[in-house]
Image (cartoon, rainbow, N blue to C red; front, top):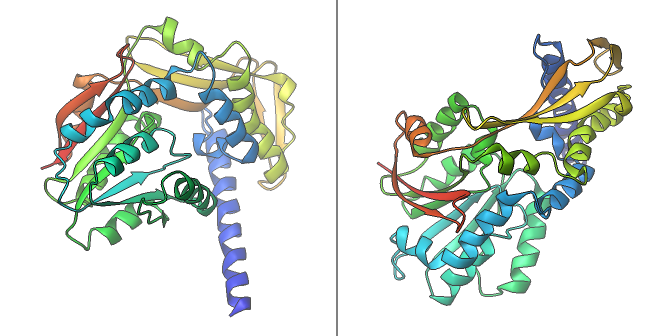
Length: 330
């Protein structure tokens, strides 16, 4: 039994390394080079992102947290939850639960009947969150679910309990509109009629507000972006010299999409041992590392028009920087 578990663990590690290697190869071999933003989050990347969330320029987390801190009762009312009817509160990618705790406290205080089900691919993240919540809200019923979002939702859909899905932090904004449409279609396919989705999105704003959030004065975002190259060096045996790459953020209010790049400051070649390949960069060449789409009703309605979701309500922070949309599955 132990040997089988060990073999499975090694296979999982090998698969993860292979995915990483293949996606880096594909991204850097493209005419317009890119790197997947999901690889930002190693141990150092996680710590840097926590710092980013607390930066004065980074309004995103702060704005959504304000909504949950001051309007949890409004969210509950907008979701049309019945205190006497059991439901499952399922959060996709719960993180540290900072915002969700505000809603959980209010639901607990009002004696709603529900199980909180945080879903994450990371077992460590789930264990940490569960431990934290057990300490802060010992009466809360928590059922962690490790795995892929859709696999977990498919398994949960076998029961007919009412469901409220939380997808917060404008995580949908890291997808292109086509990918977001496909994601939302799959999500709605795993729900039942009248199930709800609380979707957090960053709203379109002037560049004077958005750009500093992705290029802070302390250089934390730059370090976060450059750490992706350091991770490739460490895990794939690359020889990126970070001195010759710089972080660059771009945003135009007219298209509503913030982009982060790593820019080569000179003509150079980088060798990646585990891919056994050289990659050439010309001076000024950009590697796209992240997109962060900003929304309005028109853009969101366009995405939802090809899904089974309809907008039922919208709750914003006091500056109207961020919105939590209440969507219902038709």
